[in-house]
Image (tube, rainbow, N blue to C red; front, side):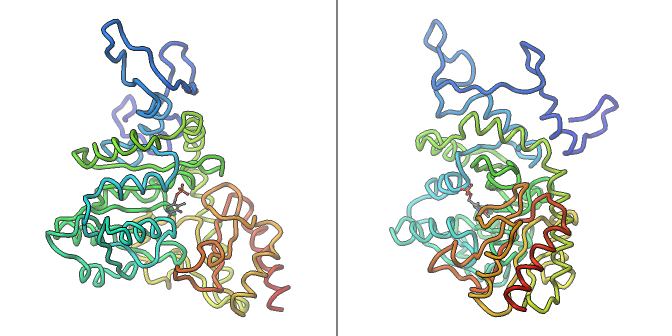
Length: 386
Ligand SMILES: *Cc1c(COP(=O)(O)O)cnc(C)c1O
């Protein structure tokens, strides 16, 4: 989109105006919610317009998809009822026996789905140390590997993977690169621009931004047979986003850059404050200059590192659980990217079988005043670690 003098409009402008949405019939600036389950056909029993049934999607979902595709500079976007259903569509669209390479440490639900596909003999799954490109290269089977999964920064360690370098490794072997950059939404990281073939986001998180919708987005640089397979999976699984949730997502996305900038700024303040704190053994945040992925993260986020960080508490698992319980302002809840700050003892949330430091607390920084959040963590730490 450009303005009247043909200058390209910034993503923040396009988002605030929902791509300058105006209802054709009424002139309304806010899109309607289209809840219909089915569509009347024309006199020849053909499609009147684009849709025949709810599972195909509808006009509310289509507008939300257009907004995300525009932001991602993607050819197309598909919205699902959750991030997990979007990930599952990818796994289900792969061929039986396909070899895939995925990180050892990543969002636990997606990892569990890959492990299940492997246990059932559906896929051959190899794992690489997250962010370690030499290990990724070593796991590739040229001509045989069909998919590489990158989560950056990854849950809950926030290690940073160089997307362009991972794309080169995947493409050299003839594989597709899928990225999960849920922690740095496309106002910061446009993964397709860095070489990813499919950009996945749990839109439940920053895109929605208000903890009131679950949604998953898949965006692609080029549509083709695999894309068609994903659209077909969504239609046959019945996992399209509901129109009311699409409407909430559109409403939430209008303020994405504003929220994300504030959350990034506050997380940086919190990370700096607790770096070297006597009650905290380690602060995991790519925004800190000493973080091994700092320079890559800077390039991939434009210097806005997001609102996700982890604190490894001195005193081990018990101390970490007590600090989380001692917070008054942070909600003890999972999820991320909402306007309210959350804290979680990650090992309790992910459960057995996932590699996570038992003393790690994952923080999702909201839009509250950063000094209030710092004071809350300070008082909780003081009670536990003295
Ligand atoms: C939340 C999340 C998912 C799963 O998305 P849902 O919307 O919860 O189904 C996948 N990856 C990451 C990094 C996430 O944070």
